[in-house]
Length: 226
Image 1: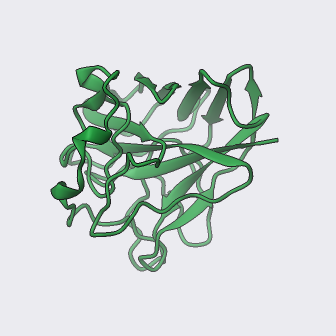
Image 2 (image 1 turned 60 degrees about the vertical axis):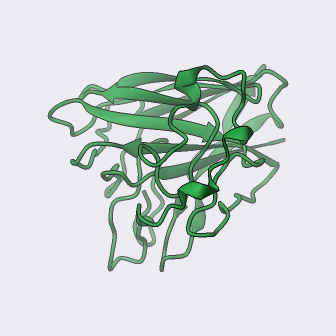
Protein backbone atom coordinates (compact mmCIF):
# COMPACT_ATOMS: atom_id res chain seq x y z
CA UNK A 1 0.00 0.00 0.00
CA UNK A 2 1.00 3.55 -0.44
CA UNK A 3 0.35 6.12 2.26
CA UNK A 4 0.28 9.80 1.45
CA UNK A 5 3.51 10.77 -0.26
CA UNK A 6 5.13 7.40 0.30
CA UNK A 7 5.64 4.66 -2.24
CA UNK A 8 5.18 1.15 -0.90
CA UNK A 9 6.57 -2.08 -2.26
CA UNK A 10 4.41 -5.15 -2.18
CA UNK A 11 3.24 -7.82 -4.49
CA UNK A 12 0.04 -9.04 -3.00
CA UNK A 13 -0.84 -6.93 -0.02
CA UNK A 14 -3.57 -4.32 -0.14
CA UNK A 15 -3.40 -0.75 1.01
CA UNK A 16 -4.03 -0.05 4.65
CA UNK A 17 -7.10 2.03 5.34
CA UNK A 18 -5.68 5.53 5.14
CA UNK A 19 -8.68 7.78 5.52
CA UNK A 20 -7.49 11.23 6.35
CA UNK A 21 -4.09 10.55 4.81
CA UNK A 22 -5.13 11.01 1.20
CA UNK A 23 -5.21 7.39 0.03
CA UNK A 24 -8.08 5.02 0.70
CA UNK A 25 -8.70 1.54 -0.74
CA UNK A 26 -11.98 1.31 -2.59
CA UNK A 27 -14.93 -0.03 -0.62
CA UNK A 28 -15.91 -3.64 -1.20
CA UNK A 29 -19.58 -2.74 -1.64
CA UNK A 30 -21.53 -2.01 -4.80
CA UNK A 31 -20.41 -4.83 -7.07
CA UNK A 32 -22.88 -5.58 -9.84
CA UNK A 33 -23.04 -9.37 -10.24
CA UNK A 34 -24.87 -8.92 -13.56
CA UNK A 35 -21.63 -7.61 -15.01
CA UNK A 36 -20.09 -11.08 -14.84
CA UNK A 37 -20.02 -12.96 -18.12
CA UNK A 38 -19.07 -16.64 -17.79
CA UNK A 39 -18.66 -16.81 -21.57
CA UNK A 40 -15.49 -14.75 -21.21
CA UNK A 41 -13.86 -17.40 -19.06
CA UNK A 42 -11.22 -19.64 -20.59
CA UNK A 43 -12.73 -23.10 -21.19
CA UNK A 44 -9.29 -24.67 -20.88
CA UNK A 45 -9.03 -23.71 -17.23
CA UNK A 46 -9.69 -26.18 -14.44
CA UNK A 47 -12.75 -25.68 -12.16
CA UNK A 48 -10.45 -24.34 -9.45
CA UNK A 49 -9.07 -21.78 -11.85
CA UNK A 50 -12.51 -20.36 -12.74
CA UNK A 51 -14.46 -20.84 -9.52
CA UNK A 52 -13.72 -17.49 -7.88
CA UNK A 53 -14.99 -15.08 -10.55
CA UNK A 54 -17.82 -14.08 -8.22
CA UNK A 55 -18.43 -11.85 -5.22
CA UNK A 56 -17.42 -13.20 -2.76
CA UNK A 57 -14.58 -14.21 -2.73
CA UNK A 58 -13.61 -11.36 -5.03
CA UNK A 59 -14.99 -7.86 -4.66
CA UNK A 60 -14.97 -4.65 -6.68
CA UNK A 61 -13.56 -5.34 -10.18
CA UNK A 62 -13.59 -9.11 -10.62
CA UNK A 63 -10.70 -10.73 -12.49
CA UNK A 64 -11.94 -13.66 -14.51
CA UNK A 65 -8.67 -15.33 -15.46
CA UNK A 66 -6.93 -17.98 -13.38
CA UNK A 67 -7.66 -18.10 -9.66
CA UNK A 68 -6.44 -20.00 -6.64
CA UNK A 69 -7.13 -20.14 -2.91
CA UNK A 70 -4.29 -20.47 -0.42
CA UNK A 71 -4.06 -20.90 3.32
CA UNK A 72 -1.65 -18.23 4.46
CA UNK A 73 0.25 -19.05 7.66
CA UNK A 74 2.31 -16.69 9.83
CA UNK A 75 5.39 -18.06 8.07
CA UNK A 76 3.87 -17.47 4.64
CA UNK A 77 2.73 -19.70 1.79
CA UNK A 78 3.40 -20.52 -1.86
CA UNK A 79 0.84 -20.27 -4.64
CA UNK A 80 0.41 -21.32 -8.27
CA UNK A 81 -2.15 -20.03 -10.74
CA UNK A 82 -3.26 -22.19 -13.64
CA UNK A 83 -2.12 -21.18 -17.13
CA UNK A 84 -4.36 -18.49 -18.58
CA UNK A 85 -3.90 -16.86 -21.99
CA UNK A 86 -0.45 -18.52 -22.13
CA UNK A 87 0.51 -16.86 -18.83
CA UNK A 88 1.49 -18.83 -15.74
CA UNK A 89 2.03 -17.20 -12.34
CA UNK A 90 3.74 -18.85 -9.37
CA UNK A 91 5.10 -17.26 -6.25
CA UNK A 92 5.07 -16.88 -2.51
CA UNK A 93 3.96 -14.65 0.33
CA UNK A 94 6.44 -14.33 3.18
CA UNK A 95 6.35 -13.88 6.95
CA UNK A 96 3.46 -11.83 8.26
CA UNK A 97 1.53 -10.73 11.34
CA UNK A 98 -1.05 -13.52 11.40
CA UNK A 99 -1.61 -15.41 14.64
CA UNK A 100 -3.60 -18.15 12.90
CA UNK A 101 -3.91 -19.22 9.25
CA UNK A 102 -6.13 -17.15 6.94
CA UNK A 103 -7.63 -17.75 3.50
CA UNK A 104 -6.40 -15.56 0.66
CA UNK A 105 -7.59 -15.66 -2.96
CA UNK A 106 -5.34 -14.66 -5.84
CA UNK A 107 -6.55 -14.08 -9.40
CA UNK A 108 -5.22 -12.73 -12.66
CA UNK A 109 -6.51 -11.31 -15.94
CA UNK A 110 -5.32 -9.51 -19.06
CA UNK A 111 -8.00 -6.79 -19.19
CA UNK A 112 -9.08 -8.00 -22.62
CA UNK A 113 -12.73 -8.57 -21.80
CA UNK A 114 -11.96 -10.55 -18.64
CA UNK A 115 -12.39 -7.93 -15.88
CA UNK A 116 -15.95 -7.15 -14.80
CA UNK A 117 -17.16 -3.58 -14.41
CA UNK A 118 -17.69 -2.30 -10.86
CA UNK A 119 -20.31 0.31 -9.99
CA UNK A 120 -20.81 0.76 -13.72
CA UNK A 121 -17.17 1.65 -14.28
CA UNK A 122 -14.51 -0.16 -16.28
CA UNK A 123 -11.28 -1.31 -14.67
CA UNK A 124 -8.61 1.41 -14.95
CA UNK A 125 -5.87 0.41 -17.37
CA UNK A 126 -2.25 0.85 -16.36
CA UNK A 127 -0.40 2.96 -18.92
CA UNK A 128 3.35 2.69 -18.54
CA UNK A 129 6.52 2.06 -20.51
CA UNK A 130 6.26 -0.83 -22.93
CA UNK A 131 3.29 -3.17 -22.60
CA UNK A 132 1.11 -3.95 -19.60
CA UNK A 133 0.27 -7.60 -20.15
CA UNK A 134 -1.18 -8.95 -16.89
CA UNK A 135 -3.12 -7.78 -13.85
CA UNK A 136 -3.51 -9.54 -10.51
CA UNK A 137 -5.56 -9.22 -7.35
CA UNK A 138 -5.25 -10.59 -3.82
CA UNK A 139 -8.10 -10.68 -1.31
CA UNK A 140 -7.83 -11.47 2.39
CA UNK A 141 -10.95 -13.40 3.41
CA UNK A 142 -10.28 -13.13 7.14
CA UNK A 143 -11.39 -10.49 9.61
CA UNK A 144 -7.88 -9.50 10.65
CA UNK A 145 -5.59 -7.28 8.53
CA UNK A 146 -2.37 -8.98 7.47
CA UNK A 147 0.89 -7.04 7.75
CA UNK A 148 4.07 -8.36 6.05
CA UNK A 149 7.30 -8.79 7.99
CA UNK A 150 10.62 -8.13 6.29
CA UNK A 151 13.34 -10.73 6.64
CA UNK A 152 15.80 -12.81 4.64
CA UNK A 153 13.14 -14.00 2.20
CA UNK A 154 10.86 -11.91 -0.01
CA UNK A 155 7.67 -10.60 1.51
CA UNK A 156 6.29 -11.38 -1.95
CA UNK A 157 7.56 -13.10 -5.05
CA UNK A 158 5.88 -13.47 -8.42
CA UNK A 159 7.42 -15.69 -11.12
CA UNK A 160 5.56 -14.94 -14.35
CA UNK A 161 6.00 -16.98 -17.53
CA UNK A 162 4.42 -16.22 -20.89
CA UNK A 163 4.61 -19.19 -23.25
CA UNK A 164 4.63 -16.78 -26.21
CA UNK A 165 7.41 -14.68 -24.70
CA UNK A 166 7.29 -11.56 -22.55
CA UNK A 167 6.92 -8.17 -24.32
CA UNK A 168 10.32 -6.80 -23.27
CA UNK A 169 13.69 -7.47 -21.68
CA UNK A 170 12.76 -6.21 -18.22
CA UNK A 171 9.52 -5.78 -16.27
CA UNK A 172 8.12 -3.66 -13.46
CA UNK A 173 4.94 -3.57 -11.42
CA UNK A 174 2.47 -1.06 -10.02
CA UNK A 175 -0.28 -1.00 -7.41
CA UNK A 176 -3.72 0.59 -7.73
CA UNK A 177 -4.34 3.27 -5.08
CA UNK A 178 -7.23 5.61 -4.35
CA UNK A 179 -6.01 9.07 -3.28
CA UNK A 180 -9.04 11.33 -2.86
CA UNK A 181 -11.16 8.37 -3.96
CA UNK A 182 -9.67 8.47 -7.48
CA UNK A 183 -8.12 5.29 -8.88
CA UNK A 184 -4.41 5.97 -9.46
CA UNK A 185 -1.64 3.55 -10.42
CA UNK A 186 1.61 3.93 -8.47
CA UNK A 187 4.76 2.15 -9.69
CA UNK A 188 6.59 -0.04 -7.20
CA UNK A 189 10.38 0.13 -6.91
CA UNK A 190 12.62 -1.93 -9.14
CA UNK A 191 12.94 -3.27 -12.66
CA UNK A 192 13.45 -7.02 -13.09
CA UNK A 193 15.31 -8.70 -15.95
CA UNK A 194 13.54 -11.20 -18.16
CA UNK A 195 15.21 -14.60 -18.42
CA UNK A 196 13.94 -16.56 -21.38
CA UNK A 197 10.15 -16.36 -21.14
CA UNK A 198 10.06 -15.73 -17.38
CA UNK A 199 10.49 -12.79 -15.04
CA UNK A 200 10.78 -12.97 -11.24
CA UNK A 201 9.51 -9.96 -9.34
CA UNK A 202 10.63 -9.89 -5.71
CA UNK A 203 10.02 -7.43 -2.92
CA UNK A 204 12.02 -7.74 0.31
CA UNK A 205 10.98 -4.61 2.17
CA UNK A 206 7.80 -4.04 4.14
CA UNK A 207 7.33 -0.27 4.19
CA UNK A 208 5.35 1.29 6.99
CA UNK A 209 1.61 1.07 6.50
CA UNK A 210 1.42 -1.98 4.25
CA UNK A 211 -1.30 -4.44 5.12
CA UNK A 212 -3.93 -6.63 3.52
CA UNK A 213 -7.26 -5.50 4.96
CA UNK A 214 -10.26 -7.75 5.26
CA UNK A 215 -12.12 -8.30 1.99
CA UNK A 216 -10.58 -5.33 0.21
CA UNK A 217 -8.58 -6.42 -2.84
CA UNK A 218 -5.29 -5.02 -4.02
CA UNK A 219 -4.76 -4.84 -7.76
CA UNK A 220 -1.36 -5.11 -9.39
CA UNK A 221 -0.24 -4.49 -12.95
CA UNK A 222 2.92 -5.81 -14.61
CA UNK A 223 4.48 -4.08 -17.63
CA UNK A 224 7.50 -5.11 -19.67
CA UNK A 225 9.76 -2.93 -21.78
CA UNK A 226 13.10 -2.90 -23.57
